[in-house]
Amino acid sequence: MTSKPTVKQFNQVACKECALQPLCLPIALNTEDIDLLDKIIKRGRPLRKGEHLFLEGDKFTSIYAVRSGALKTYTSTNDGDEQITGFHLPSELVGMSGVDSDAYPVSAQAIETTTVCEIPFDRLDELAESLPELRRQLMRIMSKEIREDQQMMLLLSKKNADERIATFLVNLATRFRRRGYSSQSFRLPMSRNEMGNYLGLAVETVSRVFTRFQKNGLIVANGKEVKVVDPINLCSLAGGKPVEVKKNGSTDT
Amino acid sequence: MTSKPTVKQFNQVACKECALQPLCLPIALNTEDIDLLDKIIKRGRPLRKGEHLFLEGDKFTSIYAVRSGALKTYTSTNDGDEQITGFHLPSELVGMSGVDSDAYPVSAQAIETTTVCEIPFDRLDELAESLPELRRQLMRIMSKEIREDQQMMLLLSKKNADERIATFLVNLATRFRRRGYSSQSFRLPMSRNEMGNYLGLAVETVSRVFTRFQKNGLIVANGKEVKVVDPINLCSLAGGKPVEVKKNGSTDT
DNA sequence: CGAGGCATTGAGCGAGGTCAATTCGAGTGG
DNA sequence: CCACTCGAATTGACCTCGCTCAATGCCTCG
Image (cartoon, rainbow over all chains, first blue to last red; front, side, top):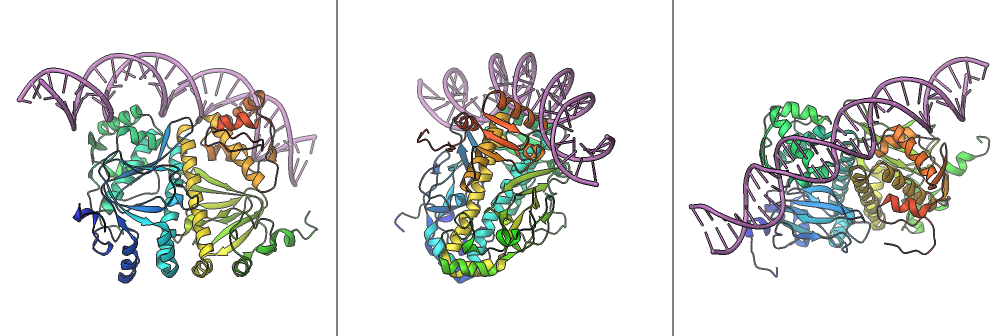
């Protein structure tokens, strides 16, 4: 409202015209309800790579939906080193973990040029009162995050380096496909360092696993560009519940 | 033990007469609202050690509040081994991660004799519509779980064996104190095996760390009985955000 | 009193971390 | 257009923490 329409296409589109709508918060809302939600959403200027959306300890005011680009969230131990707790692609929500604590418990930083939709939480909460579907959707999103974090705990506690990287790649591939991109060939938004941090591995180990995967014909990697050559075996290495990477006639959930 | 009306005392008490009320779901609800909540809660027979409350994949119907005893929740990989995702003490809620998926994504099992309050989720959801405080409380609980899981990710990915055990003990001590028990001296409800599983360590490592902690005068352990002798150093080993275990006003950051 | 499960302790090994040396690649300025 | 710089990525050598395997001790319960 106050700022000029800088990036019309990516930044100022209303929910009901947004390509991400079927994945994002408005899912399961009807057209009128989407309009109501739309009214409380603020759309700011794009964040450049490295800029923070909020810092750990900042007062909790809003949750954010990634519109384009990618974010990472991380906490830090008091002896300095940080743990990345998640990477967030378009349509994914960030900041929900702050709801009960008045302050964000993590920092959120752009890992490439990124635009977000800001959703002031008090307004969202008011709206949730009258829209049961929205309320359920919020709970669904949070419970999904819990499940994912718990899968991550399993990964960190039980899987070896190969399995971790395989799981990570399969997971990313799936998320890309959901968003209409190829799941066979994509560009990693994060550095090897960030990947290692997230997966509980040293950078060097990430690098070594990548080269090993190439030698074994699982993937072809060139810097951040990755091609999944052998999705079947990558998946079975990933170990977790089977995830289909190819779109051969199976039921998509 | 079973002669006295334990069932009455522990199992059939209404929320508003429950000793756990200030910690549990009803927190922040007024007396009338607590009565409303109370009406939808079912209180079943106690679970014996080893019995399951629900299994991974069971249809999601209810969330549960632990009333006495303790539960563990765990997922399993498809190659068989399981990962404990949490231990749940009285007043803590279990099953929230099932909200979005129609099925519980984890199994919940009693690790000692345990009583729970069952809260049918559809009823809770209806009630949440008219009680904004309840709604917020639900979100707070979920967001707290997310934060805890993320702290767990940090532990699993960055901390060594000593730090993990120290963190675990400090965390337990804090939770016991909250519930009115001593934080200096308590009984672990879980086996060494379960502790190791949860913390991503082999049983033998857990054992070794315990003996080392004793040699260093941090704790005294006798089986499952644990006395925290040197809370200051145990805390600083735990590393994370400082948690006060003793109440001598040292505001160390 | 014996059996079976849990906990402890010791010995040896290996996955992955650390340190160090290159190499690659994007951005910058002459 | 090329040379230079600085950070990211790769590769190699070595070492350590915690896992595995195995033996033994301890407690509970029939």
